Image (cartoon, rainbow, N blue to C red; front, side, top):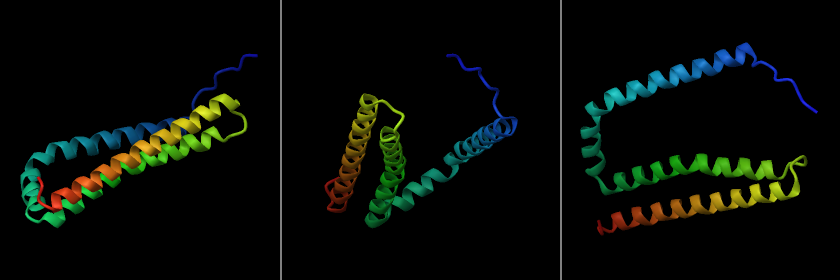
Length: 121
């Protein structure tokens, strides 16, 4: 049984292109201005150990939340009924492995922040 390929919805296509263009412009603007404010931000962040720890933990959480979200998506995808049992189990195992790895990374960053607070670095 073959299915015909349906063309993309024009409104969805325009929305996707707009998101890509806006993202590219914002990214270019950020990269263009980062040289100007980065040295003063580094001095500000390094001036207070508590601030440095808070920024480190905030970055760790910001980087790991999307990974946890992807693990949840994989788990949900693995529990759907139309996926064959073997493939669903693999997706669940991948979700658990990803969640464990991200939790380990978050714990490592927490420990690094604690060590920085104690003056080991």
